[in-house]
Length: 358
Image 1 (cartoon, one colour):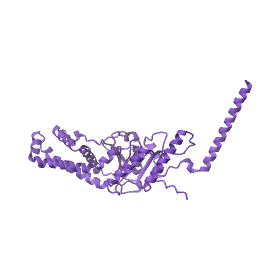
Image 2 (image 1 turned 180 degrees about the vertical axis):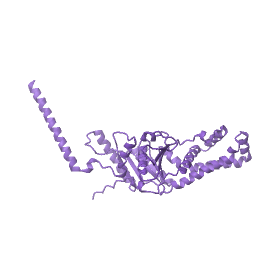
Image 3 (image 1 turned 45 degrees about the vertical axis):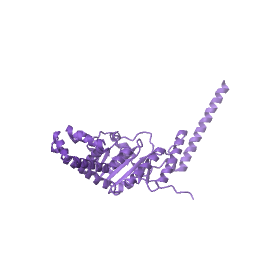
């Protein structure tokens, strides 16, 4: 008995999950994460009261996708009443922390002593900001895989930071506050202020991380392409997410070449064959995932109209022409070949006639 092909997955399940608060979209660089997260946010905006899409990728591709300039302040996307976008750098901006040189130095020291704490603090600041805004759902267009997973480790990084500051406090006692006064930093930048700031950050991130680990509130959409490295990277990402207890059950396979036209090119045929091998592996490895296949297009998907138009493939599986009507397709092929044969015969006749004249 022939194996029944698995039903094609879509992203409908994410649109229907009304309890979702955080949606991460991630994967290796260059697989189309920004396009996918932009389209997902457009689709969510049609079923939710308010949507915020945040890019934590330093390349800031969101502005390119929507063809509109975004900053670290949420901005309404043109043509929408409930979709906002913002682009943030996942590295801390010390001038935002304080204008005092002394405080800057202190934070620099702290950042040097605890790797990742500067990122952790800027991320916490952003989450605090986002939480006060009360969006219905927040989509993260995340930077390449490594960055994403670092974001999820921030509570433990901050935990270590606090422990370090506490040990310094216990070790040096009043010396700590004497030094801050000596450098003219005043009470605002005393040990309690720094500890308070770190504690506040830790509370926000712990609260958010509890939400991140709740499958009703958070899910991670993995974007990839049908190639070996991308398959490998996706598997690594899924393993890491499982380790962090982050729910993931959607995979988007982008840039799939479908047999839409009569593919004459040997190169394309070879590519399709190679892709099929990896597609089979994806379906075998992730048989309990919703796998959505997106077609490779001859042009980039940029601008709201193009994004909206392409969004239909997120809700209904893409059907290639060959799967629509095999008979009709073959009939068209035969007609085309007959026409080619007729033209070739006429050409041959002309060549023969020309030679006979000579």
